[in-house]
Length: 282
Ligand SMILES: O=C(O)CCC(=O)C(=O)O
Ligand SMILES: [Fe+2]
Image (cartoon, rainbow, N blue to C red; front, side, top):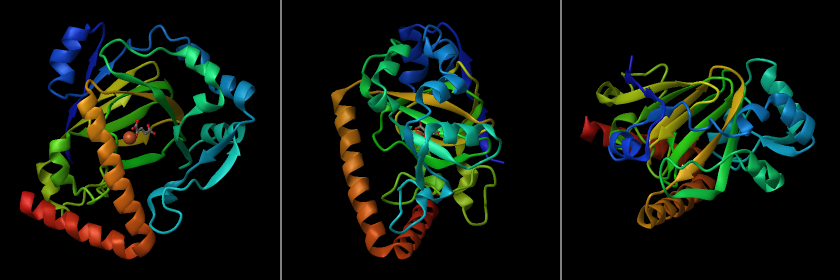
């Protein structure tokens, strides 16, 4: 099995302690009281969304999302929100909604949560929601904009496995992408021998808890129950924010363009290059 340390669970952290023990050393942590005073914590139930926003047409994804070809990163279908929530509740399904900016559709929902004060630099424009059914998995990746991410859980439990950015070479990052095709739950040491060196973290996030994922951290997410969360992003400096924007432009143009031109062949070439990098590193 992979070497994974349990993420700390902390309550009542001051800005200073958070900065010293987690933000500066880039260490993930679960904050059990970051959402304590949010109306959304109790208000945003499945029934609340069904009753008030069930008619919204929402983009739903299955595991096809990272498959090569023309449909790359395109949603599988648009369905009424109510229909998606019913599928989510019905038990195991790989259907997900991600990076969903519900606030574009229903701006008044923004009143139900607050930007945290645990650090400076929160970005107000992109409060993304993530929904998934029991058993759905989010393949190992890091967030392309390189922000710090606070993942705040409303409903259901989620298991998150994390690796620091310095470990990219051991997890066979696909060149020009933010993805790794390592299966965290079934590590294949024959195919990916450098995986033996990797050191990561593991967290089980419960409703009402917030996970701090430092900038550039790799994360794999497994929905232990159907559920959802909201991610809030922060950058402590404009330099880091600019670096994130550059990272987006670079990856997006190269990968999306090449994927369209070459499809399967592009994916194969990336696999080769990832293997070479890990061989050099390992
Ligand atoms: O929880 C999820 O579905 C994915 C979360 C994620 O990848 C993120 O917050 O960046
Ligand atoms: Fe992510």
